[in-house]
Length: 444
Ligand code: ADP
Ligand code: F6P
Image (tube, rainbow, N blue to C red):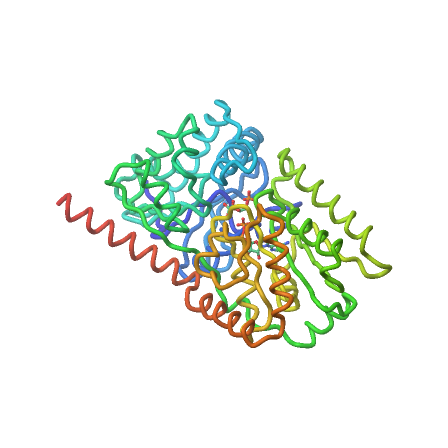
């Protein structure tokens, strides 16, 4: 029996999570990017509803049909927290923390991938297009290909692909590569990721580079009064710095706090306020807990050393925010700090740029974020080098209000408006169809 959905996206998470009985938007860039694409295609989305043991019927969320895949406690611990986020995540982010290699986690990863593939095989129509997302589901293309040879299968990796020497550490590397061989097209964020992958696979797998983006129309300009009020609430500082991230050790949050502390210590900045918005993420994993403790300790120390009554230097929020509220922060910030050690793309950088069509504001951006390829005119920095972060911040402060700074931000804004997430999806899906037709002709 086949289903009746001609376009199916499968990702670890659904675009909404069930939290204490209420549906809330899921965290992360994957969902932020794909949601408008699915809305436009009236597609079907197969994924986990974010809570353990939630067996539920498919339902519609605006234009999208959501097919929940239930995960039990063992799946959560060994597939999600374990193999996905304590093995693959650190390995694919260049060992910022050491990956754990555990046979039972691997076995659960394989069985959960089978669960996802079985669900997709049941809902996809004859000859449907299935688009598999990210590192949690690397085996799904191969499993699906066996179950449903009629399907056109694309795969997109949202995170970096590591260099061959790092990838070879993985005891199950051959199985993962075999899984990806089931896809007609495998897409990456940067050409470097694609090259790393190509260095370890046969020539017969089709790959491409497709940098993901945002829907800039949802990040338009914000009313001046709202911006003015927010800055007034902050005590009308000369410069407002902003960071917006999942609280993840890859994002370099502590490093930007250290840079700010040193700038204050050395008397190089005055009257600078930093807002750090950190979404809770993967909270039971050791390295996430350690990162949170280190960040919160630094926030307390900096405010203790340099804050004044009613005027902390750092405003720290450990919570999910509404998109509209986030947009106000983006619009009010003079300088956005995006300093990951490694990041597939980093949509926050693009969202900030989209909120500054008039050319005010500045972006300090890690050279190790995928976004640095397109947004190379930003103030680039090396997050492993505190001096480099400090000088990028100082450069951005000293350029504030200049014509050169305005021109740069307008160019960045143009880039984000030209290369939207709709264009990303269209380019990938066109290439996927073309690859499938070429293969069909060769086999005819
Ligand atoms: P990642 O996918 O690693 O989380 P990205 O920067 O690519 O990183 O995407 C993060 C997404 O999550 C963005 O769309 C951003 O707006 C959103 N986001 C981050 N922090 C928050 C928050 N505290 N509240 C709401 N949305 C957030
Ligand atoms: O974009 C990277 C990514 O890991 C997505 O695959 C994921 O949905 C998102 O970040 C948030 O992470 P999580 O699903 O573990 O909360």
